[in-house]
Length: 351
Image (cartoon, rainbow, N blue to C red; front, side, top):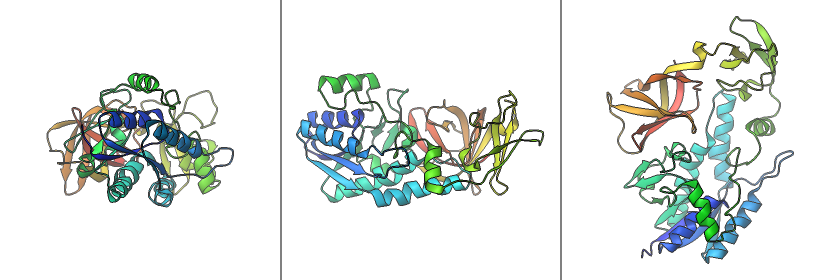
């Protein structure tokens, strides 16, 4: 029986609730922590943080474990929300969940918990941490290692992922067997910190109305008007409102001219990439070696693509074995070696 003191991030969902229960049963000295990151309502949408807080606290009471609230709202605004808004204004497609994990959950939360006597932290993520290495979860349909690639090896050595070996169906079943309050609670959707509100509504609320501009097709013809170039991402089909009967796909944006370029051709070169240039590279342990085969994912739900990693004085490039559809600057490219996450970087250029 381990008596190590572990602080568990409890979000009010079924995953983190069961994570806390499992660690308690394994003999850990468990404290539940609710991270208060975002509490502001948006026009027409109510932030659900209070309900999540009540659910997390109720589960902690049910388990008979101490419960704390860490108020990270100021830091979250500065390091996650402002980062995301700035990226969209530059025409990029950022991932706030990745930044949240890097700066808040596995840095600020870890440091704060350590200052309060914790030896370890834990979350309900579907992933595995073994000897400072990050591995994919057993349930590949729920694997969240993509969002965790910017965690340090030192943080991983002090992190537990109790659900890493489980399937989602097992998690709900085990939560129900323990009669946890959150056993049947639906998984959260939408932006990580706002919930059900969509990204366009959030950007509109934070940045206001955007200048309208031209939508231009592959022949250079103006075929419509957009309501803000920041709202569009490469490969997007819906929401263009250009008419004409043909499906159009966003292939490029010019933020300086405030123009969105589209094509009706699925084979348009603007939709496909065989080489990615990365900035802000992050390696969990050793950086990848040139000439050795890896695979890369550029979206959470996408399939991984075999690739070669080329690192020199000019930076990091990925040569893809198969062309990738709709890669976009600002997205994260996460590099895998079998089940291990090596690291990755932010896509700066696609070719």
